[in-house]
Image 1: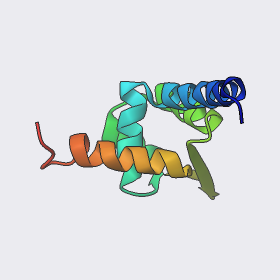
Image 2: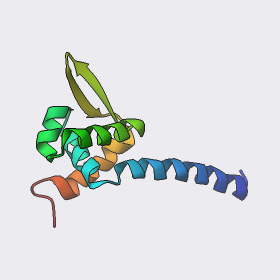
Image 3: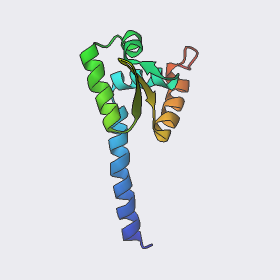
Image 4: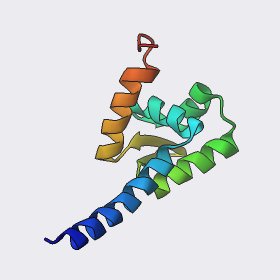
Length: 106
């Protein structure tokens, strides 16, 4: 592989990574993801944990679904969301350990 094609390949991946990070780059979405780092949650649970209004929660969950960061399952009328992206789980585990846990530094 020559240098030019290596850069083109990296540029394409960089665009994908930038889109992924853009999906995470919201304080509200990070709160949602911190909750989901601890396990599957219903929409009601997420609203109670974050204090976000239902309409805002729906918009943030739609963005996270669009970026393939979360998925959901339906049980009757209740939707349960979970992290469904290996990279997102790994990033959020690091962020959770360093910022979300009660005993996190700083």
